[in-house]
Image (cartoon, rainbow, N blue to C red; front, top):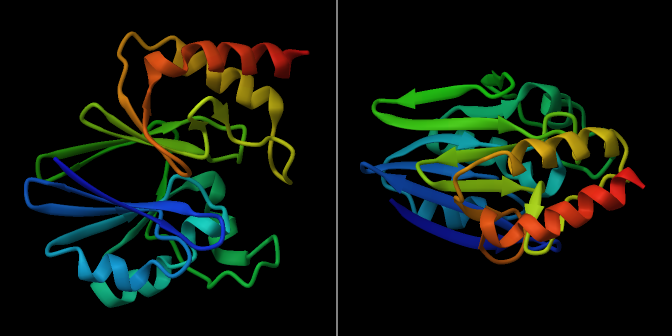
Length: 199
């Protein structure tokens, strides 16, 4: 597996290109991501959205049209791609696959799982490829995604933290903002956030 990463737009949202078995997967093409993505893929397969916030999906439609590939988005966040609920001027994109909770896909031998971790958004998911977890805005270094936005839910975030803390594995975590970490390194922080949200 080879991973390319570039922080995009005013919120420095990480866009990833994951290449495995000579297949390229684009994760969260944010603001002004189109040119960089197109220059760095040779065999693009799909656009994978961790969730529906504008800074993660801004270039969805442009990349889709240039590369002729489908968009996969968690089903509970698809409305954000289609309707621009925050009036950010986000270019409209239409998902081709409405991803169900904890749904897995097999791209001709490349297995990719969307793990549902709601809280930051209703559909917020992390994308697991081998032992690499692309966590979007669920987990960051020493932090978690905000739960004070419209459509956020602190109670759901607590349950999502419980869910990931139950894992025995410690995947490498590639967040939607900032640097990489591992689940093992983040356990203490996640436990602290869990207590904080529970009051």
